Length: 192
Image 1 (cartoon, rainbow, N blue to C red):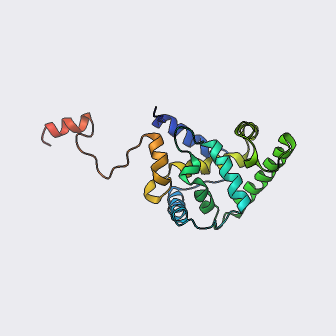
Image 2: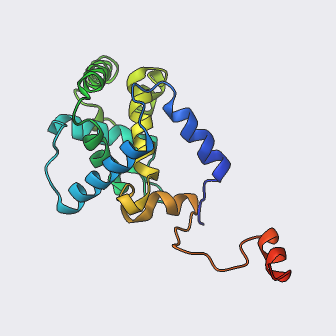
Image 3: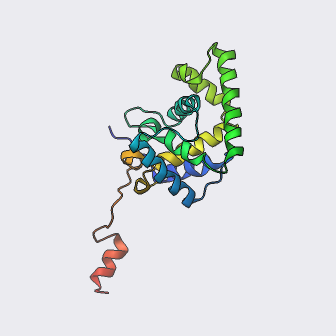
């Protein structure tokens, strides 16, 4: 059974995602990051801005925000490459917020589940910890970056293999054949 996210639900989630984030990305910034992230993912380049620990931990968080189930999720879409690209030049303040938030999450992992790393927990434990921090700037930022990386234009390689667009049921066509809609068909009938 194919699951599709309605356009209205997507827009609501997208606008809510920016709330609580330490980032304010413009469309050109998102598109640029998508292009660079796509190139890095295809070439399997090393990460430029994230440590190995951050890659594994942020990937695990993104995978719980948009999980893999009967449809591909953030992992398959290569969201971590998008996050790495966005945290580039002139983003030291945002990186510090994320690093501090990750440290606090790892401390909570140790206190609550006697573990060292978030990615080592089972999904139930991960969801429980994320639910507890969902109102923090750290989580708001990771959620925002995950959604931006998942649903960005594939033209700029923002969502690998159109995974995000497939989830939405969006058909990315260069041109559409008439009639486009009722008003277009009516217009064509009149010969205008």
